Length: 327
Image (cartoon, rainbow, N blue to C red; front, side, top):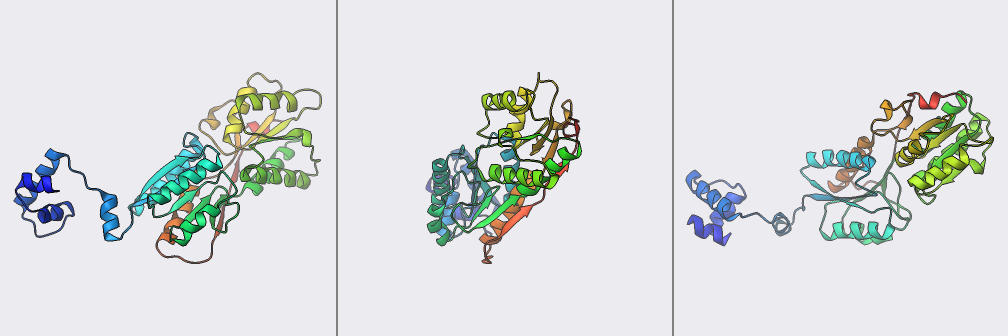
């Protein structure tokens, strides 16, 4: 600011007034200051300004599993829509399903004095956030709950969605239905498996552990599952894919499998409706998930001190063809 003032031939106070859009600066003087700012490449340190004023840093933190996954990209977009409406920016990082990385990112965002924190948990221990919450940083968990902490949480109906998927396949004559999910330690995977089992009971079908696989989805692991579960005389005639990543790997593995099993995917994904056959999904508005969590976070930022809330958003079956294949 001293350099700007010297070049423009004004006081530092005048520079401050121009930078902060304060009144009582002659237009010609303001133009001189702005020209000097442009020439010198001066940029305000917003963090320092806000800390000096005792106000917010204008940011919130978002920890997701993988920003490269389209699911989390859409989630991030929903969060940004709400944050923008409140004049905030979003700092986002990927935990890569690693609890230590999640902790590192969350605490780094808190060290940067974010106004609030949104976390898709990778682990089950979140006591490390208690000091931050006590210090006034609101935290909302989304897609999965915290493991050992009572806090605001926004989820989708994992249980009901998988029950609906089983019912749909049973209505089309399937009696041997497989379930391929993510790692068993992940909340969404375990809840969707619970819905799968409940759905079988409601449909009068027997649960067969040999038709269930919970494992971090890779091209190799899903291809192996197809070989074991969807071929041979005792094969499953239908499969429920526990998330969009499982579904993509599964579609690759099924490219040359005949007869094709019926398929229902939990989570929609891009181009699912253009495949042959189009993929039937348990869909939900991922952007709405992000928006609901962000709206709850900003309610806390603005003083809402009611007890922690648990919000469960609905899901719905979108029949497109792959789930309607007869056994």
